[in-house]
Image (cartoon, rainbow, N blue to C red; front, side, top):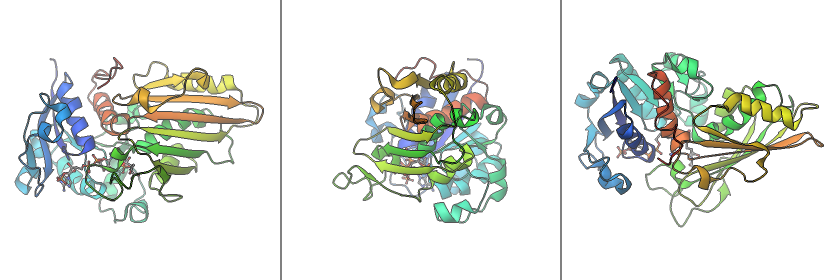
Length: 348
Ligand SMILES: NC(=O)C1=CN([C@@H]2O[C@H](COP(=O)(O)OP(=O)(O)OC[C@H]3O[C@@H](n4cnc5c(N)ncnc54)[C@H](OP(=O)(O)O)[C@@H]3O)[C@@H](O)[C@H]2O)C=CC1
Ligand SMILES: CC(=O)N[C@@H](CCC(=O)OP(=O)(O)O)C(=O)O
């Protein structure tokens, strides 16, 4: 092994945290150091694989409570710290870790906007680190690699924004979208998107198939900000554990052909380890079955040249390409590592 980067995961007992720990444990150039929960967590001291039996034999290590004494040294003991914590918790932890010299990959929305005014409106708290908002780099791996290479703080995108932007950005960047009509995004997520803690949202008897956050979900400004134009975004909760499908209707600019749309996608993604294309969606459409437990985002499209509309579909695993997998992609880019463990396309 030529280089080993020692990693910590804060929030490791959660759904994205444990996926991160597993990806790090199997990565040839990353070393899994300590895994943390909050200081008073009921899970402090337990073995991580006892909480998540899927990883027995791989993650047989104790979970450390993040006490003040631990926090005082995390960023000194690790080169890279992943924050798989709630938004405001991430904003409170990141400054300390950065000051200790660690690179920080934050999976929350705590650093995804430059504009601090977004936070009271969409996240319910005042942001206390406006300087760090300017420093953070948005970690949409296929689109921001140059900036990620030198970033000390990476804001890993939300799950819905990753799916939506992966489908929309090639067309927006190539100038193929109508300038007036908003793209309309309807997306369905599995329940793990809401995290591991019990709540009415993820209660088995309450989960159905329904929209939520209509015209007010925090991912709407995130998608708009990163796309450079307004969108209409409606998330839905589905009664399955993991995965997202986003179906997006767009109006194309005058005279745009199916061939131009196809060329834009191939130009953006050919050779990419994590994006797979379903050109024209002739045989099959992207589906959760095809992406669950992988770091792929599958993108398909079909163009109606008569009406000038296109329907785009993106499918991903919300915990992997939508969170932990993309964080590892960013780590690979930041530290100049190979595409492991994604290049093989195998289930993770
Ligand atoms: N789930 C998903 O699909 C996605 C989630 N995200 C984002 O990633 C982050 C994590 O999400 P998810 O894994 O679903 O969340 P979970 O609720 O499943 O896990 C949260 C983790 O944080 C720990 N934690 C809570 N408070 C603290 C604290 N003060 N210090 C240290 N650890 C703490 C929890 O353990 P304990 O409470 O026992 O301390 C738990 O380990 C969130 O910001 C979420 O918005 C992003 C993209 C997709
Ligand atoms: C099903 C479900 O509840 N999904 C979450 C999104 C998860 C995600 O991407 O998290 P960020 O908060 O990090 O953006 C939601 O709608 O709030």
